Image (tube, rainbow, N blue to C red; front, side):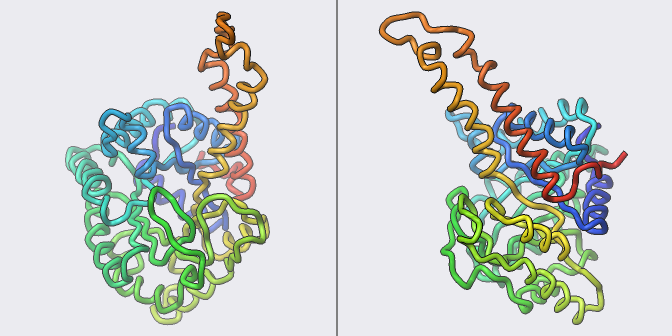
Length: 340
């Protein structure tokens, strides 16, 4: 199947919300990690989301120029071709983009997709994220209003983060403290500024104690039940039941019970990066340790080409990462839910 059209992406999100499951959103940084994600979704018979962060896009742009737009566009164009060989629908998304990177990342990509739509084509990406969590809520929502209007014109869904996620990702960091919990007032102000669909569809990354990076279960106090309070608070004011499509950030190390509670309360997308990074790298490290004398020309010897050929260890990395994607689909209950 091809990359999801705007209509298919909307159907994916509607199905997830109605069925109380979520799509894993897998960060990728290369064509190989892209294939690993696509393979995992195909093996799980789950549609899914592939995303590129600003750091990932910079890496994809090459270390000579480190151009984020070039990197993101190049991988998206590649994805539009290779995704045809996988029997699932895939949405392309750009992850966390703070204010100082909007002009060098999201705004040019929105403009590019708008031109494509005006020419009768589908947008290059299906959604973009604006991370204004480091700004005041008023400034955050003001910029979100502008971006939502542009996204709507390009048939793209906007993701907004209205309060901080703890930890660090691509240079954006927040302390782990009480500010990591979105309030009902924050949610109401968001609905007042961005509407509830009539101004364009958006995904909401609300905070319920989420932390980016690596941590063990129990080390972070997650309150996924808070999402129910946010939905109910906004529904009471605006008269629209279950108004938000929530995104679960910083989910590495979450317990299955926490994930289930988040799904029951409206999460339709869960970002996964740390765990898939490790899944990709772990078999490579194992291969290098096991074949030390082969991958290195030790003491002037010739080594073993079969062991240092990138395809040898690359296949192991792809298989391991795809297996982790399959596992994520199981946790998020998206296994077997692909649109036929």
